[in-house]
Image (cartoon, rainbow, N blue to C red; front, side, top):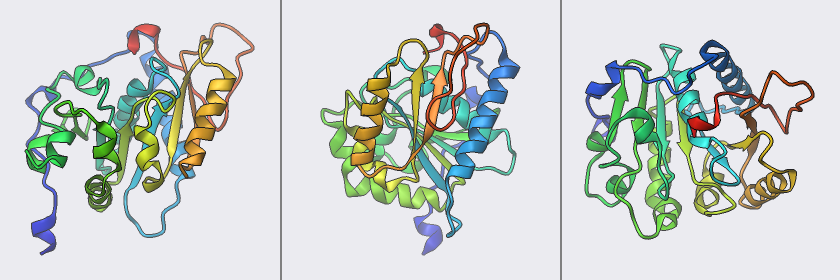
Length: 248
């Protein structure tokens, strides 16, 4: 019975043999920042039952870099051969992961939750970077219905039994409530902010909003830091800079 209920990923994505880079400078430094973030996240999540760790990557507002962080964290976890990593695009309003990876956006998550496609058809494996991905899927009129429902919670429970790490990219919490609708069912949330643009009031409101949704705040990644200047500060939890504004 257990084998019958086991979710089987799709075949290897044929495009995954060609690794796509999205940072044109300081690639090694960027990789190191995300490796450090990975280590911090791992230490922030303690699970005694041996199941996989699931966490949300979000931001307060759009264009702060959350999708790029999600992808690079998946790459970082995937760089460890024995890890089985899943990246899910739950930003059903403005999905970007399929564009970063140069793969179709559908069928994806919404098609699976709508019983239009099975898991094999919506989950593919990026062999070059050693992680699985579920894209957003067909656009739906009310994304919160899909993400707050029992079907999605049951899916997460099954996935945590099959993957070591589940990274979930969601819409900005100050603009869409989707992340708050299921944040309490994950192991925590990582907030992405953009240096010199994100404001302290917005960050505080983002944290307050997630806290009210009973989410565990794992930390903050500070994006787009100019390391040529002195005096930049580290935010709540941990913070790392990467890339350019063209990355998101």
